[in-house]
Image 1 (cartoon, rainbow, N blue to C red):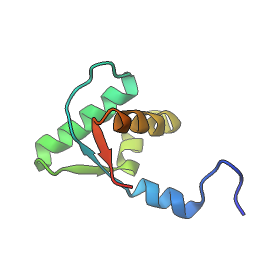
Image 2 (image 1 turned 180 degrees about the vertical axis):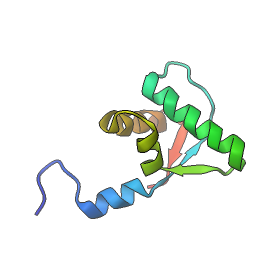
Image 3 (image 1 turned 90 degrees about the vertical axis):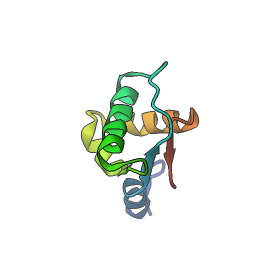
Image 4 (image 1 turned 120 degrees about the vertical axis):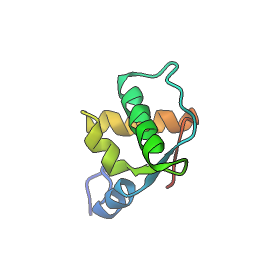
Length: 86
């Protein structure tokens, strides 16, 4: 049985392999980490076309802070800037 408040390894693996799509390219009222995430997804979209996506694992590696990255992904999803396929 895992520690309370910490997801299991299976849930973490599922989360890390989840695709993230950029819906809108806007950085209005975004913080530093959110801007880094949006720029990363925008560059992938330019390189690979409209349906370009990135895994959560790739985004975490591109951004300096892991925990803040997950929080930033939730905020961006709530504002409908990105789409995370859970």
